[in-house]
Image (cartoon, rainbow, N blue to C red; front, side):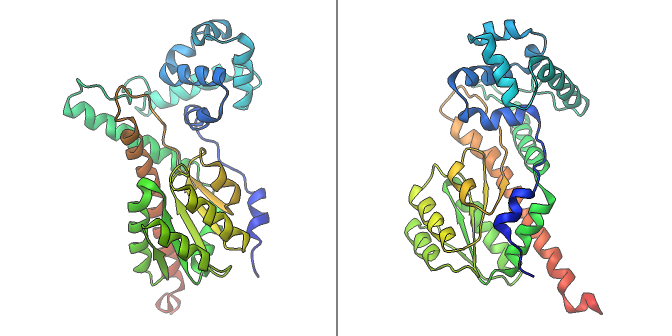
Length: 296
């Protein structure tokens, strides 16, 4: 029996992510006042939990009512509930050796190679943990079904994700799947326009890259082509038109140089690579289950 993917997505719950990861990923969508609060919490989480709402408002240079609204937007009744949850989260992080203040992600010109290595490991590990924690199992199984049932699969990697898409394509080809991938935007659009409802489209990356491709994916979905995206909360258009989205959760850290973009990209690519590898492993597992030898 065919699955109604468009309707089933609305009934699938989302696993909660950590408070700090949630703040980092919605920061760009917040009001200017809320962004000031978010920045202060992300930079000094341990200090924030020692403050009253009035003290936090003074340090963030916002009104006290903005603090209340900010915590309510995160799903808390008010600042005391937010503060208690933050304390519990910081205690858990310290217990597993993941103290957000012990090893800041910000790269300094004076960092040694060892410090750089530790910060890189910290960034990538955080991205992988947050991304895998956010996976909803029911939604993931629907995505696997789309991949296995599709006659053709087009993979598009936006911007820095082009290499991730190419690697994923190579892996899927080893499973005998009909995969199409192109890095040239004009060819991507041509292929997208040939897709049918029996095919599927998988887009990896952020929609700030190549807006003409985003438009082509929207046109494909209007024809009934299933769309799966691996993207962040910032990609609002992709998330709105996709049947299913796997969240890539890489915290955007404040940097002291122009290398900000590349530093963020490294953590983001770690999240993207983790999801594509997980999809490949699940598809390979499904292939083994369906193999004739397994039924003997």
